[in-house]
Length: 305
Length: 321
Image 1: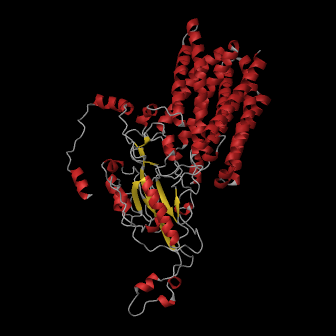
Image 2: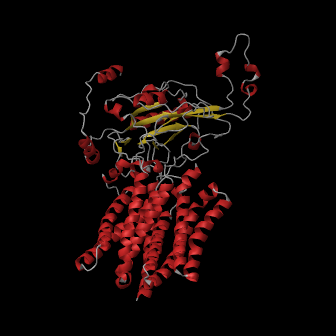
Image 3: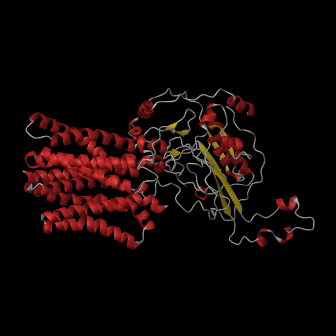
């Protein structure tokens, strides 16, 4: 192979500056380039949490207390399936070349969170589809019920994997903010379970399963409070980036929407008021607060640029 | 060299036979899953960019665009010295940076002292060579760093980004689906997704030229040998000799960037000789491979999920019974 290894010719060298490292236009902004991930990714994060969380909560509830939760779970699986389709649509549309979506499945790279997540979602979609389909069939087929239970158990691990990968996908990269977000995966996974519990509660209330709703309501309250732990840890991770790109008033606004709207108001509505309409409103507030947080997270690299 | 290029150009040109619609659709679905025979590994190659001899001529940018048939970016004034492409992009795989380090008061009266003002016969060579240096211009031709452990390659979910037999990082254009994971992962801000075809693009280190035994276009075009190409071991030796030479000539600030691995980042197969902090050149002072965090992040995510499941189970057992 040819190399350009000619000897160096003496060249007049620049003198060292009197003061080193004077201004440079390249030193002012972030070195990295923000990927073209915008609102669709925030919605994808929300729908990912909603579908995996709903499946996990429905499956766990049904397996632990079948008498109480089977009928609600049989409605939850088709809902989770629809949410998965919406999530997949967001994922595909966000690609630069959506017609090449199937290229995601040409390799399995556990070291790549997006590859692992794609495979988890693909595997999760199979038992979910079967469970949703069987749930929609008329009852009375004991064999099919057993199959449904079996695929629900099979789907637990890939569903958890699908919930886990999303935060790690964002925290394992070089973008300002995301690179510091050690608890992003923790927050999103925890949040998925909380969202799933909220959806199950809504289904129970709409289907008039008072006994199921009576258990899910305190469960949702507990998960709401529990979710504050990874959220606070995430905010601590991001405090430098957040304080750099947002003013104090903007941070107060986001905090009010996410904590006030997404936690305190729902808690009040769930436990102090507690009627059907207020239960639905509480879950809507939780979804809104979760969406706001996801938008703030997705926008971090763009706001830093 | 020229004869080798002419020899290659004279080879018979071939193209794929036309395909029918069904065949094209099936090909689109199946072809990405086909595997060829991987080529035998060759000695790793790379770039050594000596910024002290860069004159900012942009011949490398032009040669890169010409060889790789990259479109122009549209000429515009950036307001930053002679830099009008501003950054590496999907259509600019080489980018010459200009850093003007002059005192704030850079009037001519300060730059040209009284005793150096031209006489009736004009400037003499001695006068110009002995002119006091009040500042300096740093120039650097930036490019993909072809990291030995490349975060972009680790991130790529389709396997489009590979290390070639020359240990260079290469994006297979027929595989990339534009997911942008590589864009997010690169700590040097090299890779860009094209708004035209939706795929990621960057320097290929002229993989096609290397396979034909040619030097990459930019290194071939560089008139000052600022961009040097060759086997990486040979480049390391050459670079270290150059640093020693500069130190002996009083340029004590000269050092190599990326020639050896650090605790947080691998060696770069495209490394640099710099005379100021990396950030002055738009390079990260301490590049960090985000994959070092990945296991911990997974553990935290799984623990958080399991904690939520445990809480749910606790409520179910307590109230469900």
